[in-house]
Amino acid sequence: MKPLSHDKREIIMAAMSRGESPSDIALWVGVSRASVYNIFNLHKATNGISPKPYSGRRSCLAHGQLDEIRRAVENENDITLDELIERLGLPIKKSRLSVILIEQGFSFKKRRSIQKGSCAMMSRKNGRAGRKARKNLTRTA
Image (cartoon, rainbow, N blue to C red; front, side):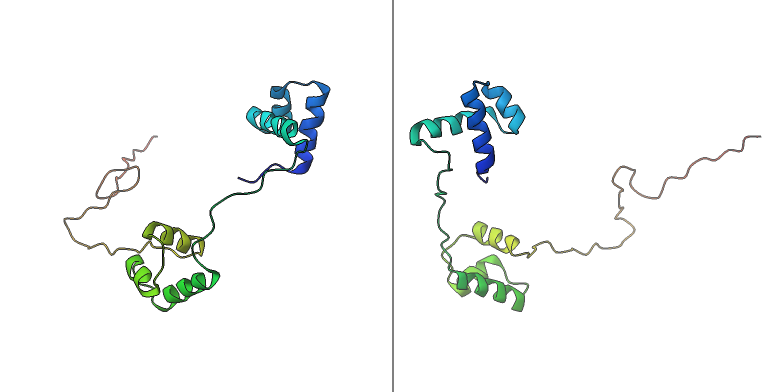
């Protein structure tokens, strides 16, 4: 989640210095009450309102490896995740590779052919299975 903008942080601190309640400030600015308290406590601790630096984990893949993954999938579109990890020697798990491919716009979903036959009845989303139900029409004079 992105940190609050500097403008909103200034508005929150100005309202807190005026003595308004955190609930009213949160409602007015459009943030949670906990966010108001967090910004106020950050100001008390550091005497500033700038957000903390992002401390997320670094990617274990180099930028060149992302390009290799994309090229490998484009060249051979039926490659499995296991084969891709083995061929390119990637230091990641299948679940992470799946997320990376989805982020790059690739899809895993394949259409499966449905056998046509007399015994296989298709059902509509909110209807009966089988033939289309006929309405009984009556004439009114």
